[in-house]
Amino acid sequence: MDRETRILAEVAARGGLATDTARALIRVPTVNPPGACYREVCEGLAARLRGLGWSVELLRASGSPGDSDAFPRWNLVARLEGTRPGPCVHFNGHHDVVEVGQGWTRDPFGADLSDGRIWGRGAADMKGGIAAALAAAEGFRAACPDFRGAIELSATADEESGGYGGVAWLAERGHFDPARVAAVIIPEPLGKDRVCLGHRGVWWAEIETRGHIAHGAMPFLGRSAIDDMGAVLHAIETRLKPALSARRTAMPVVPEGARAATLNINAIHGGAPEPAPGDTGLPAPCVADRCRMVLDRRVLIEEDMDAVRAEVAALLAGVAAERPGLDWGLRDLFEVAPAMCPPEAPVAAATAAAIARILGRDAAFVASPGTYDQKHIDRIGRLRNCIAYGPGRLELAHQPDEWVGVDDMMDAAAVMALVLADFLA
Ligand SMILES: [Zn+2]
Image (cartoon, rainbow, N blue to C red; front, side, top):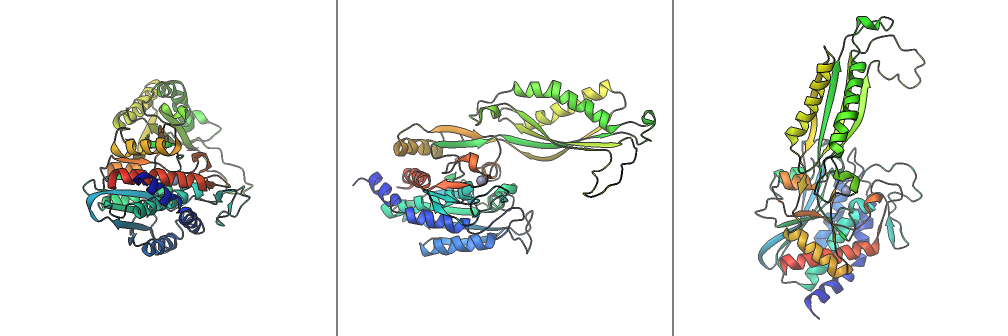
């Protein structure tokens, strides 16, 4: 039997390991926010990995956003040492899941196994991916016990809320330093035939217009911040948005609509506050002296963050020039730079080649419209050789009746095992 046949047979023999691991992870309701049961999920996985001979560390991201004694931010980092020096391949998956939401016909934490699928919150995003990575590592190790280098597996907190108590925290402590890690695969549910090279960037900002309060019966004695914001909105619709949709990226972002720069207005608040539920009182007549808008601008890799900011500031200055006396402010809330691994980078090329071997068709290179933990590995860790590749369908993420197919998990595990062979055999 040649090496590849041996690896594939050993991976295929680990269907039970993959299924049991995924189900055990799903049964722990690691809902974020608030970030529940992180210790429990890490301890369960740690016991399994130690039983298989991995060395395991549990690390609490003390002081990170959201970390408290009630909801500590626990992370797991496990390592399997080879028999001789060589590169380290790291699989990273987040163990947190989003809220359950409405519309389920299954127990969201029951981890039912039926119709060849495992059902539950986090099945696709991304506990099935963590389980597939473990089956890949164990299958590869059984077939190539004298492998070089090392395999690492981490299960990390808070990806759904920015990853600051998870991958960012580990990256700041050198866990993704290119001096010790050669390649990272994040088994997010991009689909078993797609290699995700990276993601667009984000800039969130708040625009404020400031007016002057007056009696609503004599609005000419005040200045309405809402009217001013209306002019800003109009400028966004008629000037900014057409310019953004004309700007296209060469990154293979899916869906196609996200290959343009995009802008969403997440919220507008101005004037009298919303009445509390059950409040039957009438509002008081006032001219609004404050109005705030939150922008969600998605940034292409070809764009410059400072230019993105300056474009909005220039738009506001333009509106102000047409409306004498308009007082505006612009405040940064959050930003993430775009990240992309070149398709010819070793981990991307090895994964694409393995997909072609296992599935008999060419891999698709894609990029994500929103961000995920690759940003921290890229920006803080300074490691470019990083992709997202894993089983599960992206459109099921965060949906009711989320599931992952057992066959998809095992195909993705076979692909990941061949990538391990590429680096470590
Ligand atoms: Zn995810």
